Length: 446
Image 1: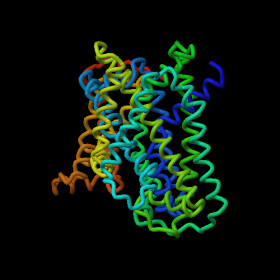
Image 2: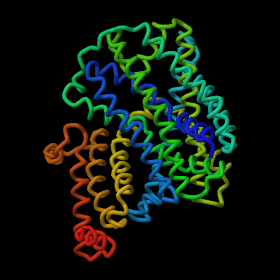
Image 3: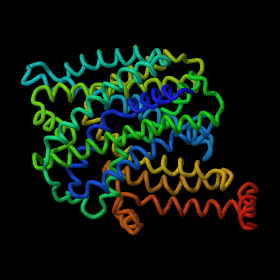
Image 4: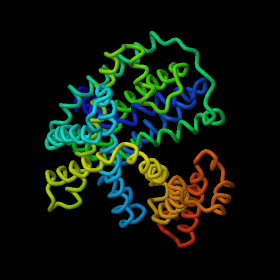
């Protein structure tokens, strides 16, 4: 495959990743982290960039996509886990959230004190927005050209323009970190990276990348893995640069705050730096970012559910995903975010552990016992952390979880995951799991 094609697929991947969360979280992190900006943004980039790239490579290695990863635990788990991932990043959370943010930043700033009901305007906006998403998603073979050649360069140029102007004009000293960033800014940034949803999105985008590579003549698995890594690095590099730039913009805007969220911060920065034209530029950035992500997620859902249920055509799946996303989007942004954040707290640890185990798969020959216990121990604590955010908690359990290392940082699942891994290997050895025993004996002879 030509270098130009690798670049185009990488830019397409960047545009699919770069949505609402990628815009609003880095600047808000910067404003909160202050003088602790660098450790915080490094932690954010690890989960916001590094983890998605690893997920893409893991998907390419697994031959049959995300479901193959889940099948390492159990076929029923693989089936259920994959459906939950696609529905969450697709029509239930990811797509509607992006559509709402596009409305909030692309249209709402121009409304002023209009007498028209915002719900009605949101309805009209989403009809047009999802109509365009639907039309582009019907032609997935054209997406690489549309996004790689046109939409992504426009998006990147708009973001870079805003950040360069901010770098030149804003010369404010960094402020003292907010309370949440004073003790462990790296870990706080690491957890904040969950909010981008990109690791979950990568589970779905993997099938789009492989499909795009196949259209370019890359059919052998080894080549697919290699080019997936290359295109992932193109997208990851672009994401990392944009995250650092937006984060630094936020850190430089601290004296103009406080800000409730990244949206308010970017609006203030755009108006301060460029006046009314800044609001227009920001509206273009948000609308393009959210639109390209919605197209990527819709295509991913279309490919997956068409493959899972072959009797339902790709066009029908895309239609259903678009309609459901449209309906959920009209519930409003606050309601969507209120549900999505606890879900991410539950889903991300499971995703991280599953992907890490996939990379060390050959060292324990894919023993189901290792996968099963690791995911079980991780899942218990991850799900409880998510339920606490819904207000469902038990004092005695809180005390027990609070005694675990890293629990104060929201990482109570890490030690249980390692314990599950250890017990899984021991169990496999005791029960004479031939694959694991063979690996362990081979190593002991070295």
